[in-house]
Amino acid sequence: LQLRETAARCLANSPNAQAVEALVGILQAAKEHRGLRKLAAHALRGSGDAIAVQALVAVMQDEADDLQLRETAARCLANSPNAQAVEALVGILQAAKEHRGLRKLAAHALRGSGDAIAVQALVAVMQDEADDLQLRETA
Image (cartoon, rainbow, N blue to C red; front, top):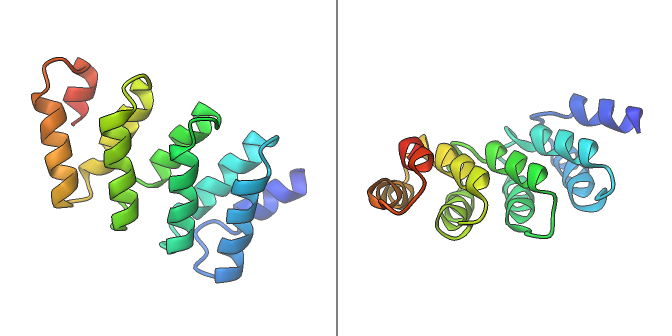
């Protein structure tokens, strides 16, 4: 396991398709190894690869998955120009009312995107007086 963790760290931010594929495989398959999956998510963060974004979105949206890992995936999608990432983060912001921390991370991740849909969603949260004050401040 330690060797796999070291390898995941070494592949961080690699634009190499084979590296991305290996990291996505870890993220999807190693459910019993939360730490390794978290490392894989962080390693995929800056790849810019559509497959990496798709894998991070899938983890973030999987309600059966570990909440900490879902939050890590949201952090890793921050400022992504990828439309799928923005759409998924907006969906979390609007739908995951029971997961305040995840919604706050989604809001934070959307702040720097500059995407018009993200801006609309953040404005809606700011204006919703029924919503959590901390979340409104984050938006």
